[in-house]
Length: 299
Image (tube, helix red, strand yellow):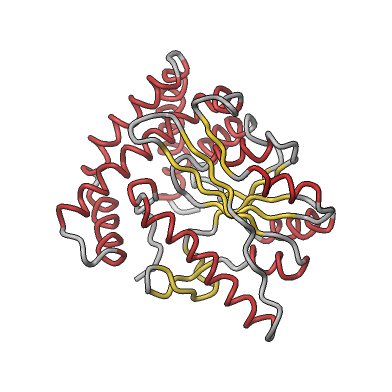
């Protein structure tokens, strides 16, 4: 263990965890709407000040929307920070959101696609992205009496990761961590006709090169492989935030068509192109709701 790593584990991680815990419990003392407003306000101010991530966001926006001006890119980034701050703050009130289905706070469209997946006797996959508040889509699935499993990427700080996992228990306790062990769990779950929600909008260096905004993007193909192997539906789940509010619309869409001709690799590439096309459509509709601070296309 290097000195740098030792300092990080023994000092930086605990300090970061304490700060997150204080922020989290402070927000729990207020209402969901007030907490969301505070989170949005804080990151609208602090986010653009963190130059590496702000520059990454602007670089990604230029790549995706070359026709837009710098001022337009900055405007999108500004509201991206607002949405991200709200998402972080809303983790303190996931228990409230879990019981908001059917209210004015969460409106659901296309529930019949979920019901069909529940009753078809097959495993099922739900396609999501780091868009709006991505946890809200899971609530809408579970509300239709589907015991949902979610695939997640662990936070770098294990102490913070533990806090996030505890908060997510209000969504589902069936969590699968990305990695080799998680891949085995996924296969076992699918063999038992499980329903799994996966977010595939972040770069996977050893993934498949698939177009995204007209540029090759290394994409995790697991959702496509599982769907083709089990001939089961992939149902897109788009969560849209009403601007400046902790209110949402969850849109379930028709399952993706599964290619039936060609080799496995050819069919997988066609299917993953359709996956990325769906996510791109969502991002074009409301670019302020997507997480532009991830290096989606790499260098």
